[in-house]
Length: 94
Image 1 (cartoon, rainbow, N blue to C red):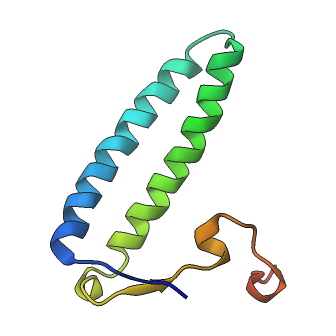
Image 2 (cartoon, rainbow, N blue to C red; image 1 turned 90 degrees about the vertical axis):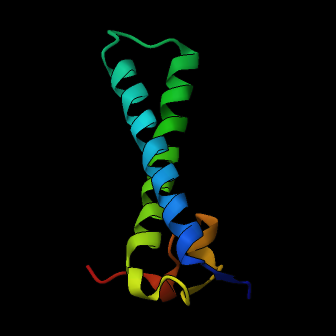
């Protein structure tokens, strides 16, 4: 299992950069949403941007979840880190 350490200073810089990127993605998606129809390339771009926006939002949430413990926070890279759907062991209650 791989452990990842997050430094407080680098985490805050990363959060700022991620928020900027998230805003850029939102603006581009809004621009695409104003189109009456999208070309194939625009449809692909829209899908890619939506996925990137979600990954960006998840990363921001991870880095800002518990700022007091950010310097010692470790996470294990597992199914959730790989983007795989939750399996039976990680299924949430209905």
